Length: 306
Image (cartoon, rainbow, N blue to C red; front, side, top):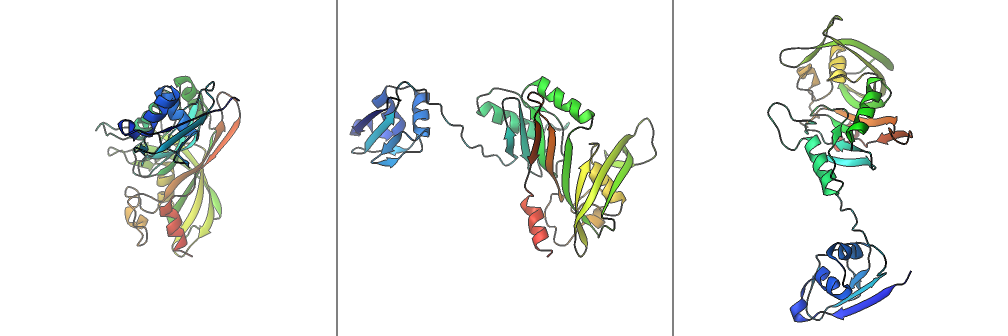
């Protein structure tokens, strides 16, 4: 590696941003200069420069130490978005950690800032110019892991895995009351009412089979921390089944609302989080398991219940 060191003292007419000085000094393109800065090759008065937009004044000494034959790629900037954080990403798919209160997809009201929209913007921001193809959904007031394909065929392959019940989806929830059984399984036939609420009823051509396995993680004075593993992934499945069992998820404003109210659960969201997602990578065949930490609302509630 043939490293070259260049240095200049900024003249009054060149004062301004450091990247303009580096570009003039090195003869590099704008993108190359941003890459050079990102790789720690630039200093101002002997101190490392971390931002291409840093200001320089007359008399400042700007130094560049780099390999002129190397292509310095600009490092991907940290993405700051209230709707999600990235839990896993490669060239084929992305798994994000959705914030509670975020719609996964727009409804008939054409809401903005849905998860699909924000992830698509993120992919364009990272210069992949790819659409986010949704694989599965989470309810608006539920947080946790959601998978997207970066190509339609990748999403289709993952969706097929979900149809065959191959992915493992594990949720953590705080439910009202003290659950008696250490573990169990809910098997229901869910239908949809006129107001889009889900309810369990007799099996028919219009119902969907919903199966949830659960285990008690911790019993508290008047609530229970449970882990729920989905065998099927029907809309509102966990919420309906625990409510029907007399243990609605805390904060649920749709199912057994009065029982779901708790004096210490002051959040607008519900106490349900998609914590773990396991599946087979549709391209590499590798067994993937993505984990998400419990959100602050749940950890704070649990800390106050000791």
